[in-house]
Length: 249
Ligand code: PEP
Picture 1 (tube, protein in one colour):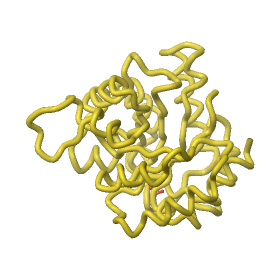
Picture 2 (cartoon, rainbow, N blue to C red):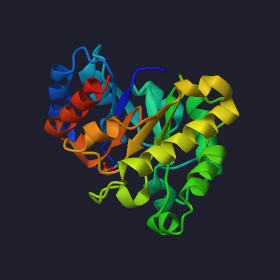
Picture 3 (cartoon, helix red, strand yellow):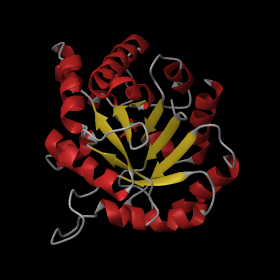
Picture 4 (cartoon, rainbow, N blue to C red):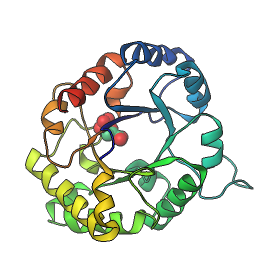
């Protein structure tokens, strides 16, 4: 197993003025015992990477195109993210699946592009409330796992984030038993496909992770960290989540 990981997803939030949050994180986490990644909007990526300089906090994109370059107005390739200083890229976030009609096949093609560019793909999956209430959660996430991950996925180039759609930005969190059930099923699915190497693929939980619930979530088996939205925007919220993950080691 690699180091545990906390990744922050700033979504469509943040301007130059918010780089101070990153400076504060850089000072607070000069020698973390876990991996820390911030995924800002693309407009801030290179400035953020520059301001972090040689510090251990990494930056990532929030999406990439499956092609290397070409006539795709408004899109950004994995190579461009790498060139801007990214080491990671979030792919298949439920907001992109919903807002941009991204299918599992598209996510898989993007992950292949990310791997080719040398980026670690954080591949998101998760069920809707209707699917959860219909008892379909394990089928849905199992299907997304099988269809969104490319064959070349390894512990070094792939992270999986379980993000129940109904928990994102809502303040609702699944029970610890529900998180354990899904993460256990995802681990088993990874092992079945990738063998023992899958043990090292980090499984993040995402959906309303906050300073006051992070420790209990990090205590759940097969939870190797978190993908954090709203609470990643302020260093005063994000830092206690990082501390909780360090305390779980
Ligand atoms: C997310 O969008 O990836 C997320 C987990 O958001 P939040 O933490 O705000 O629920």
